[in-house]
Image (cartoon, rainbow, N blue to C red; front, side, top):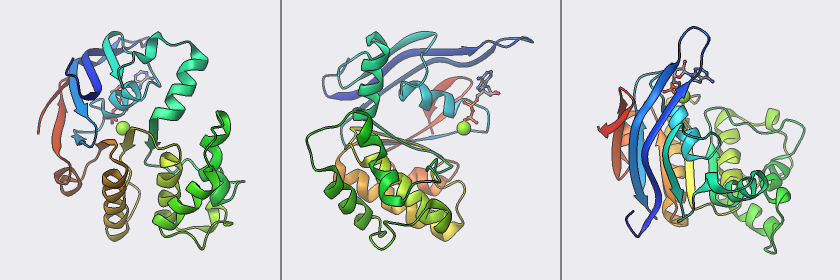
Length: 226
Ligand code: ADP
Ligand code: MG
């Protein structure tokens, strides 16, 4: 494994069991990314992009192959250790914002800090991040009281609250209109640079993909250069 890699995956396979016939989705995916790098992953619907992101995000275990994040094998950890690891090291942004409707913007951003409290002043960080995504005037609003773009900006702030080394975004602008999508994408890239994390972005937008250091495509279960 290359010494500076924050994320290293080798020979990842994933097959879903299904009563009709097993679905072989990933067939030997290799990838290595260092701190500060960004990667886009493109490919037609159903080719396995979300599956791959779930495996990188330690939400699911590969049938074969290895995942190493920050020098650790997440799947060697116990369930509680893995939950803590994921909480501290990985940030997720999905196509849907996944905000909790009953909580305010501020409370939603602070949610990932409650599971495993740390010493740092999380409320100050939350305020800073919400100002950074231009929502300092919406701290007490509920998700239903925000626009689609605003909700996605809250989701980005929430993903970054624990300063994760790895940011995983699954079609983060897929539900937004063109202009809003551009603004949210720009914000994601600016924050990626400021935080110096690894950014992995699944997208259908060639323009968005072009902003990443590397662009790859999932084809027949393999990750190939786009
Ligand atoms: P993408 O994100 O590229 O659209 P997915 O990773 O969601 O694709 O899905 C890849 C393939 O795996 C699809 O053919 C899908 O039907 C299948 N699949 C996804 N999740 C499951 C599951 N839990 N059980 C069985 N098949 C699944
Ligand atoms: Mg998907």
